[in-house]
Amino acid sequence: MSTASFVISPEDLLKHWQGHRSLTRRVIEAFPDDKLFTYSIGGMRPFAQMAIELLGMGVPSLNGIINRKWEKMEEIDIYKKENQPTTKAALLEIWDKNTRDINNLWPKIEASRFQDIEVAFGMWEGPVYWLLFYNIDNEIHHRGQGYVYLRSLGIEPPPFWER
Amino acid sequence: MSTASFVISPEDLLKHWQGHRSLTRRVIEAFPDDKLFTYSIGGMRPFAQMAIELLGMGVPSLNGIINRKWEKMEEIDIYKKENQPTTKAALLEIWDKNTRDINNLWPKIEASRFQDIEVAFGMWEGPVYWLLFYNIDNEIHHRGQGYVYLRSLGIEPPPFWER
Image (cartoon, rainbow over the protein chains, first blue to last red):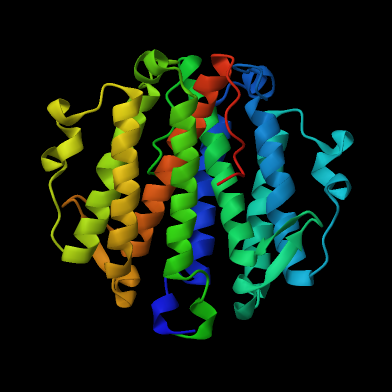
């Protein structure tokens, strides 16, 4: 490794992710309770289901990266119907627990891990940094979709640049 | 700097960005010609206008980072009405030129620059890495919105994970 490699520090990448998660939390909050779980455009999932997808990826990704053992997708708690929140308050409570879990887990990623190749969840092969970026990018992608849902409901979403 | 800082190399960050840009190109292509410039949900901009925003940020950001001189927003060529494409073919041509320009400019970013603080476009202060991430994140955000437009038009968008 040379100094040419220094794009972003692990600490700043955590801040970057949590900044996005903070914005996504405000997008969840901006939905009326019922619309969060029911509103859809073009046959897409309601925003709550997208948020549940994100919750099923973040902490399980960190656990896999740290422990080098990957859950199967169907083993992930929040993907089981009976564990899924059905109210905005319950969804936000899980969101906040995940925020704390991510902060606690992050420092356990060894410095050398970011360039290691992993087969995430036994299915997706790539470097650890790529998996972390995938988590963040997938969140931005779905949250952008949530913005359209909100706008079409006549609700102004929180500004994209506020984290 | 310690090895703890090695999350992603500049070369891989370029690949990451161009992977996203390749997907956005396919989203532009997926729109019917007229809908690209006219279709809207909830009072939002048509997808072509979002793509033009992205084009106005990417290369001008790199120029600012490399030359330490920033254009004002109103000086950026593609933000001038008379320079804006009005057909899908013209938009894609500019997109492809920007792809080449980004590839050519990227190696000119000095290794030490990623952590420097810049006031981008004379308005937004932050580290260079943050500005580059903002470009990528903003693209993912708007492209996610384009996915909803496509779905609501009955068009299947390209898979998110294909870059």
